[in-house]
Image 1 (cartoon, rainbow, N blue to C red):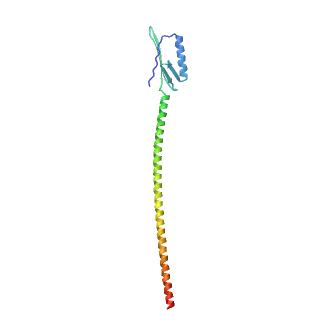
Image 2: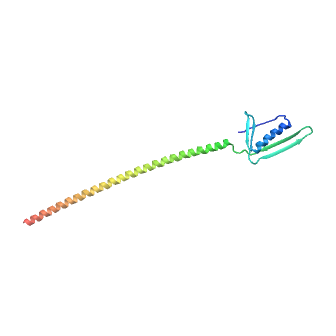
Image 3: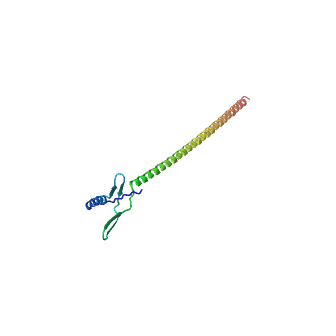
Amino acid sequence: MKKKFDYSKEETLDAVFNYLTMLNKGLKNRQLALGNDEELVECLLPDQVALDISAEVKKSTGSLSIEITWDVPPSEEAKMHAEEKAEKEARKQAKEDKKRLKEAEKAAAEAEKKARKESEKAEKEALKAKEKAEKEALKAKEKAEKEALKAKEKAEKEAVA
């Protein structure tokens, strides 16, 4: 935002000296505040400035111009804007990270659920296989007992005869 201060007035040489002394103090402190309450132009000055002085004397008048120019350092407003932008980007990144975290947690929960189902399925299959093996073992035992009983009966018949 452009700010401008203009001052033009006929003054005594002592008043001009006092005004330039005030400007000198501001230059020394690298900070100028020019204007009044309604129009105040504040200038933060860098270490390096350009100085242009010109003097001219004509038959009936003379003039002295002093011009000081500089590159404007980033203002506090610009710094705040940059900080706000960085904070906004950080919030956006945090939101994206949170979303990715939720997606990862959801995927992990689904994988855990799937693994649990597969484990339960494997346990059921193992239980069925065990039950089947126990049934087959029981049948084999019953068959062996029947055969042993038949063999005993046959042996007893043969012993009686």
